[in-house]
Amino acid sequence: MKPALIILDRDGVINQDSDNYIRSADEWIPIPGSIEAIAALSKAGYSIAIATNQSGLARGYFDNQILEAMHHKLVTLVNAAGGQIAHIAYCPHGPADDCDCRKPKPGLMHQISNALSIPLTTDVVVIGDSIRDLEAGIKAGCTVVLVKTGKGQKSLVKLKDPEYSPLKNIAVYNNLADFVNNLLATA
View 1 (cartoon, rainbow, N blue to C red):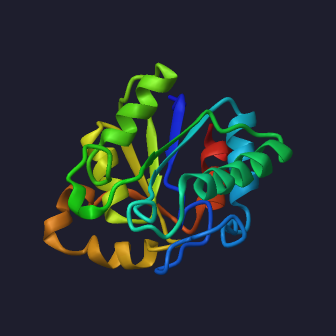
View 2: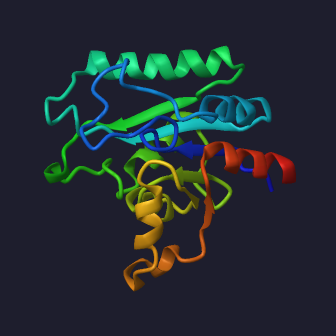
View 3: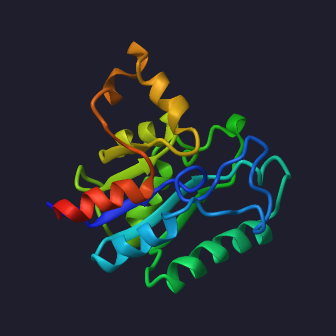
Protein backbone atom coordinates (compact mmCIF):
# COMPACT_ATOMS: atom_id res chain seq x y z
CA MET A 1 0.00 0.00 0.00
CA LYS A 2 1.32 3.42 -0.95
CA PRO A 3 1.97 5.67 2.07
CA ALA A 4 -0.07 8.84 1.98
CA LEU A 5 2.56 10.71 3.95
CA ILE A 6 6.34 10.71 4.02
CA ILE A 7 8.00 12.63 6.86
CA LEU A 8 11.58 13.71 6.30
CA ASP A 9 14.21 14.89 8.73
CA ARG A 10 15.89 18.01 7.33
CA ASP A 11 19.61 18.28 8.17
CA GLY A 12 21.49 15.26 6.83
CA VAL A 13 18.56 13.97 4.77
CA ILE A 14 17.58 16.90 2.54
CA ASN A 15 20.53 19.22 3.09
CA GLN A 16 24.12 18.87 4.17
CA ASP A 17 24.54 18.76 7.92
CA SER A 18 27.17 20.42 10.11
CA ASP A 19 28.29 19.74 13.67
CA ASN A 20 28.48 23.54 13.94
CA TYR A 21 24.81 23.86 12.92
CA ILE A 22 23.38 25.27 9.73
CA ARG A 23 23.18 28.96 10.68
CA SER A 24 22.00 30.73 7.52
CA ALA A 25 20.18 30.22 4.24
CA ASP A 26 23.58 30.41 2.50
CA GLU A 27 24.82 27.48 4.61
CA TRP A 28 21.67 25.51 3.79
CA ILE A 29 22.95 23.42 0.86
CA PRO A 30 20.84 20.58 -0.57
CA ILE A 31 22.34 17.11 -0.83
CA PRO A 32 22.59 16.34 -4.57
CA GLY A 33 19.35 14.76 -5.78
CA SER A 34 17.31 15.47 -2.64
CA ILE A 35 15.22 18.33 -4.06
CA GLU A 36 14.42 16.33 -7.19
CA ALA A 37 13.57 13.31 -5.03
CA ILE A 38 11.06 15.33 -2.99
CA ALA A 39 9.53 16.69 -6.19
CA ALA A 40 9.25 13.16 -7.62
CA LEU A 41 7.45 11.97 -4.46
CA SER A 42 5.11 14.93 -4.61
CA LYS A 43 4.35 14.35 -8.30
CA ALA A 44 3.64 10.68 -7.50
CA GLY A 45 0.92 11.76 -5.06
CA TYR A 46 2.69 11.59 -1.71
CA SER A 47 2.30 14.31 0.90
CA ILE A 48 5.73 15.41 2.10
CA ALA A 49 6.35 16.90 5.54
CA ILE A 50 9.50 17.89 7.38
CA ALA A 51 10.16 17.16 11.08
CA THR A 52 13.34 18.84 12.29
CA ASN A 53 15.01 19.55 15.61
CA GLN A 54 16.35 23.11 15.49
CA SER A 55 18.05 23.60 18.85
CA GLY A 56 20.20 26.28 17.20
CA LEU A 57 17.28 28.59 18.01
CA ALA A 58 17.49 27.84 21.74
CA ARG A 59 21.29 28.08 21.62
CA GLY A 60 21.11 31.53 19.97
CA TYR A 61 22.95 30.46 16.80
CA PHE A 62 20.18 31.87 14.60
CA ASP A 63 16.72 33.38 15.01
CA ASN A 64 13.25 32.57 13.65
CA GLN A 65 13.74 34.89 10.69
CA ILE A 66 16.86 33.01 9.59
CA LEU A 67 15.12 29.65 10.09
CA GLU A 68 12.21 30.90 7.96
CA ALA A 69 14.71 31.96 5.27
CA MET A 70 16.19 28.44 5.26
CA HIS A 71 12.75 26.89 4.96
CA HIS A 72 11.76 29.40 2.28
CA LYS A 73 14.82 28.32 0.28
CA LEU A 74 13.82 24.66 0.68
CA VAL A 75 10.21 25.24 -0.36
CA THR A 76 11.21 27.47 -3.29
CA LEU A 77 13.65 24.85 -4.63
CA VAL A 78 11.10 22.04 -4.27
CA ASN A 79 8.37 24.15 -5.94
CA ALA A 80 10.74 25.02 -8.81
CA ALA A 81 11.35 21.29 -9.33
CA GLY A 82 7.58 20.71 -9.55
CA GLY A 83 7.01 19.44 -6.02
CA GLN A 84 5.37 20.63 -2.83
CA ILE A 85 6.08 20.51 0.90
CA ALA A 86 2.80 20.01 2.75
CA HIS A 87 4.06 21.01 6.20
CA ILE A 88 7.23 21.85 8.13
CA ALA A 89 7.29 21.16 11.87
CA TYR A 90 10.30 22.08 13.96
CA CYS A 91 11.37 21.89 17.56
CA PRO A 92 12.97 25.18 18.72
CA HIS A 93 14.04 23.78 22.10
CA GLY A 94 17.39 22.67 23.46
CA PRO A 95 18.18 19.16 24.73
CA ALA A 96 17.65 20.15 28.39
CA ASP A 97 14.20 21.68 27.82
CA ASP A 98 12.37 18.34 28.14
CA CYS A 99 9.73 19.31 25.58
CA ASP A 100 7.39 16.90 23.81
CA CYS A 101 8.50 17.93 20.32
CA ARG A 102 12.25 17.24 20.37
CA LYS A 103 13.08 13.97 18.65
CA PRO A 104 13.38 11.18 19.79
CA LYS A 105 9.99 12.09 21.25
CA PRO A 106 7.19 11.86 18.66
CA GLY A 107 5.66 15.31 19.17
CA LEU A 108 6.67 16.65 15.74
CA MET A 109 5.07 13.62 14.08
CA HIS A 110 1.83 14.33 15.95
CA GLN A 111 1.98 18.02 14.96
CA ILE A 112 2.29 16.98 11.30
CA SER A 113 -0.51 14.42 11.62
CA ASN A 114 -2.82 17.04 13.15
CA ALA A 115 -1.91 19.76 10.65
CA LEU A 116 -2.52 17.48 7.64
CA SER A 117 -5.34 15.36 9.12
CA ILE A 118 -3.42 12.21 8.24
CA PRO A 119 -3.31 9.53 10.95
CA LEU A 120 0.04 8.10 11.95
CA THR A 121 0.19 4.43 10.99
CA THR A 122 2.76 2.03 9.57
CA ASP A 123 1.70 3.39 6.15
CA VAL A 124 3.43 6.67 7.08
CA VAL A 125 7.18 6.59 6.40
CA VAL A 126 9.68 8.58 8.48
CA ILE A 127 13.10 9.03 6.88
CA GLY A 128 16.06 10.11 8.97
CA ASP A 129 19.80 9.96 9.30
CA SER A 130 19.97 9.66 13.10
CA ILE A 131 18.81 7.18 15.71
CA ARG A 132 16.59 9.83 17.30
CA ASP A 133 14.74 10.34 13.98
CA LEU A 134 14.07 6.62 13.81
CA GLU A 135 13.02 6.39 17.46
CA ALA A 136 10.55 9.25 17.02
CA GLY A 137 9.04 7.53 14.00
CA ILE A 138 8.73 4.20 15.82
CA LYS A 139 7.15 5.87 18.87
CA ALA A 140 4.62 7.54 16.52
CA GLY A 141 3.69 4.14 15.02
CA CYS A 142 5.27 4.81 11.62
CA THR A 143 7.59 2.82 9.37
CA VAL A 144 11.16 4.15 9.54
CA VAL A 145 13.94 4.33 6.97
CA LEU A 146 17.60 5.27 7.50
CA VAL A 147 19.64 7.12 4.90
CA LYS A 148 23.45 6.99 4.99
CA THR A 149 23.90 10.73 4.39
CA GLY A 150 24.47 13.17 7.26
CA LYS A 151 24.86 11.14 10.45
CA GLY A 152 23.57 8.01 8.71
CA GLN A 153 26.87 6.10 8.61
CA LYS A 154 27.39 6.66 12.36
CA SER A 155 23.78 5.65 13.01
CA LEU A 156 24.27 2.46 11.00
CA VAL A 157 27.18 1.50 13.26
CA LYS A 158 25.10 2.26 16.38
CA LEU A 159 22.30 0.00 15.13
CA LYS A 160 24.59 -2.98 15.77
CA ASP A 161 24.30 -2.28 19.52
CA PRO A 162 21.66 -4.51 21.23
CA GLU A 163 20.21 -1.34 22.80
CA TYR A 164 18.73 -0.53 19.39
CA SER A 165 17.25 -3.97 18.67
CA PRO A 166 13.80 -2.51 17.76
CA LEU A 167 15.53 -0.82 14.82
CA LYS A 168 17.45 -3.89 13.61
CA ASN A 169 15.47 -4.70 10.48
CA ILE A 170 14.80 -1.25 9.09
CA ALA A 171 15.42 -0.36 5.46
CA VAL A 172 18.66 1.52 4.75
CA TYR A 173 19.34 3.57 1.61
CA ASN A 174 22.36 5.50 0.37
CA ASN A 175 20.42 8.78 0.30
CA LEU A 176 16.95 10.21 -0.19
CA ALA A 177 17.15 9.91 -3.98
CA ASP A 178 18.05 6.20 -3.63
CA PHE A 179 14.98 5.63 -1.41
CA VAL A 180 12.70 7.50 -3.80
CA ASN A 181 14.00 5.69 -6.88
CA ASN A 182 13.38 2.33 -5.18
CA LEU A 183 9.96 3.33 -3.90
CA LEU A 184 8.73 4.68 -7.21
CA ALA A 185 10.10 1.67 -9.13
CA THR A 186 7.97 -0.65 -6.98
CA ALA A 187 4.89 1.56 -6.57
